[in-house]
Image (cartoon, rainbow, N blue to C red; front, side, top):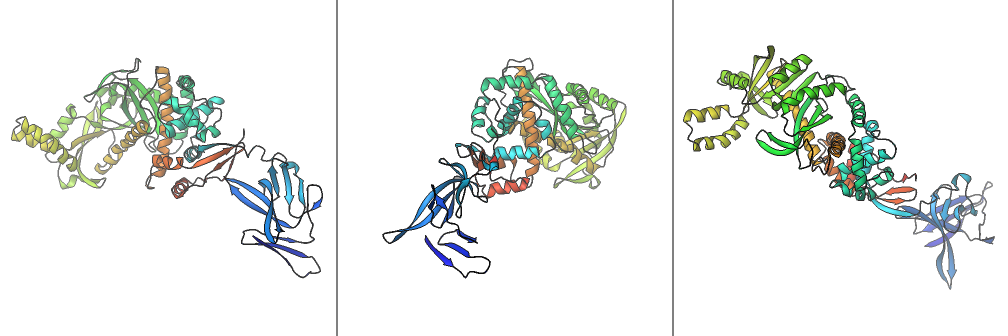
Length: 545
């Protein structure tokens, strides 16, 4: 690197001295009186310049002086160590600690406010997975529910809960591996007091299964979800959790002909947002329709005044219809084909169903829907007899060959074809024919929540040994399902989904030092994810030990 001195005319204000490094990136210009600095006790220091270099995320500095020896030019370099404050010329190295340095004045003491700055930051500790957990917790912190999530437990238990929540979403697998995941993830920096060894997790899940703990959570969480305006209807459905755990709630079930040894999990979702609102679990041998009354009572105690319910066909029975009318809960549900009312309605209206006046567009296809009044438990109600031609074709292909093989008559085959794709929805409310399907199929939201719970929130396999830990496990999985549902809505129609985004972000690592975390630069796909969520990826993050 060539170095030259260029002197300009002396104005009557000041003399200017320019040092220019040809072929390098540093140009230092100083004005005014030239002071010759000293090195180690007063020997004159020839004019030089400060060179900076970033290595492994840390900025270092060297003082360089041009020398000649045997007619050859070279730079004599003195390491200034790590840069603490480049603007104020504050550096740190092993020999001097924290100090100041400038080309004009040489070495000096550090200012009082910088005497301890950066102590210990230079000690490298670990490389961690960063992007997925930084994104997850930053995203959750921006939702209206973060205060609820972060106060489920207090003290050190708070760190354990939030870390375990991250493991359910980001790590996955047997909980005996949770501590290994935590140690290699930025979550260990965010929640350093977490205790995730196997035995400790089992004890912690038992604590989470405490009724008082969960009641406090639901009171605050439900209040946050239902704070918005409008009618807050509910969606109710259940799902089997197959297991062989020695619990009273693990029983032999027969659900629509599907026989399993299981426990049944009931989810209640808010209709407008699709958010999981509440959960219950029941014995595997209890049928769905016998659970509605208790579910409604528990919701009332938790602060949910239900005004509208959309129910799966398994919840329809005379007792539940009576209950809904008595509670003043409007409802929409589907009739199963073995119900007497279903058979009567189809027999009365099937012949004239496929008529032009009954044609309704829904979800990029056409159906035939005929509305007719009916009576339920002595109350006025409305039935919507529907036929989906597309589903009818599929059912015809599946049923007719079997019917012919069994020796069915032409009349029986004809009736099978006519009834293919037919279903009946009943409601306490008088709605237009083209309004009933969009309303009823909002229940797909709860099916999506169950899909999230099973595939992304680690509800299965259960991996517990008692009902107490089982209850705590369901609680963590429920909160994880809320988080995943919120992220799913964020990435909807954005060309990705929450799991793809989190997997991509896991590849963004960070370097952990004693007092600071240095994230690696995000790639384009990572930047796109941050932009979608409006989260800014930091250059450095101070760490408080």
